[in-house]
Image (cartoon, rainbow, N blue to C red; front, side, top):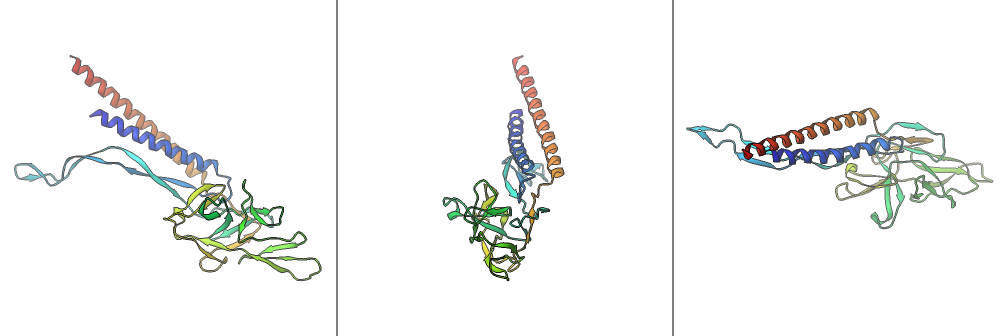
Length: 269
């Protein structure tokens, strides 16, 4: 009946509306450092089984196929794409980029994952206490904490995460700290909490901590940032595709509505 088509098309409009929101968020974050795109995954809904395959179809014949009518679609979830974004040169001494796997650890609200969050953004700076903090609205402190003395100069961060600097009265650089990274077996299962920060879930697995360049961790590049991995062309194609399918589902609703009107007119006679 046409009312099934109405409900089916309506489910398509609802799912496509959510997909449009996801695409809009991806495009809005095209300039967000370390941002990872999300993809909407669709799945079909229940089916009305009007006939099973293999049942008698007349005389001694059996139906080679069944007869099923689908009831629409829905968004099953959003999947994060952790493909590495392009490198951007900044020449800022506290800007860091991870080449390869791994995430920085930062302090967040104690109500979230015990106060530890994870990020690919490396736009770090110093706070009033000389601690390395993420350049987001929360000023999340890097963990383990790295403190740069006020009188330190020529601060250098090696590929393996060792932070060194020259102090007054000393001719040789001294070690100021060691940056540690964390990696997940399924980063797509992380939960996004805003401010460029993720927290683990039951599906992401527990974090494995290690030094950069060791145990599968990527290396660090000082003076570089990892840009957003949003591909504007891909997102615009997705946007156009979503818009066209939305229009087609709207036409299905119009066609089903006209069919129901015709049925009502027939009954009126």
